[in-house]
Image (cartoon, rainbow over all chains, first blue to last red; front, side):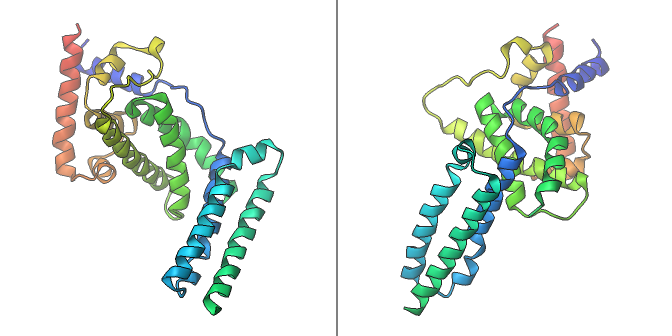
Length: 105
Length: 153
């Protein structure tokens, strides 16, 4: 085997298919979208005091954990992705409302 | 963020090659699967909307390479020797055995050059090194590969 043949063998090897468990692109997209929604309202909350922000952050973090972690089990239970996205939107709005309450208190 | 309808065809078009790239560098099947999924998640979160398909694909590889670097650092820190799960022992070929003996950097260079057909500049962008360095590093990686192949004959 000369150098050209060796490089040809390298190209063939690199082109050889590998079998991996592949994620559903919809699930990846929903996960990213949920994270985007949850973070979307944060800039508006910058006016809060540090303590208020930390309190709200902790609440949002817990809600995010509750929402994001069981995305697949939620689907397994028959909940649609649209419903999960709607839930995430509700959480984000609730967080923003809470932020408003905290800042005016 | 890229829309769901745009994301799915992009994912279908790019995931087979990205899987091949990551699988050859991640060290284990579990790590490869996690990195591929995380790459697309970060791509979406990065809000990369402009550019051609080719530019989006290159951006995807840059994310994957950063995740691989983190994975390699994690592997180096691991004190208890846990042999990684082999990708597919039955599919071991002469070339794959040679690649296994090469450094992750050399394998990355060979992949980007010979599987992706990247220019030196594109490889440099993906790997965070200058074009001139890529030329030298690739030449060395190619020589090491050929020497190892010759050594097996």
